[in-house]
Length: 107
Image (cartoon, rainbow, N blue to C red; front, top):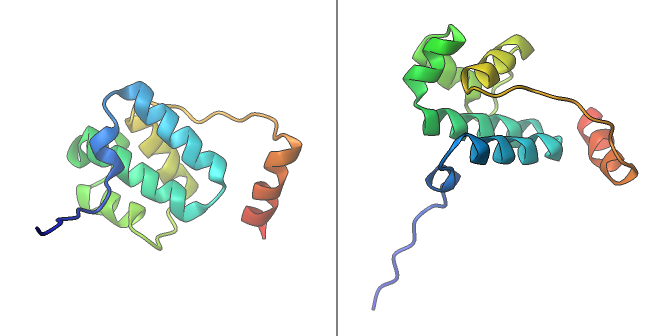
């Protein structure tokens, strides 16, 4: 018997806007740029890259470039993508436990 494995894709489990919001919030709380960009890429695939690119005022290829591994998109691009996903970015006070992740991300 041969076991066939497939790469895990969180996009297969994000069924609605609430799922996307929870997923992106969790990734934002990680404080790691790569995790956040990957999550935005997953969310854009769920919504449709072409649709997200159009709503964000970007070309489809520009969106792929902005969200690819190792990219450093401008902050306004990230905000436009979040808005194009039908979401908004919010800020809350970090707890003592969260402070360590923020310190690591700032280093």
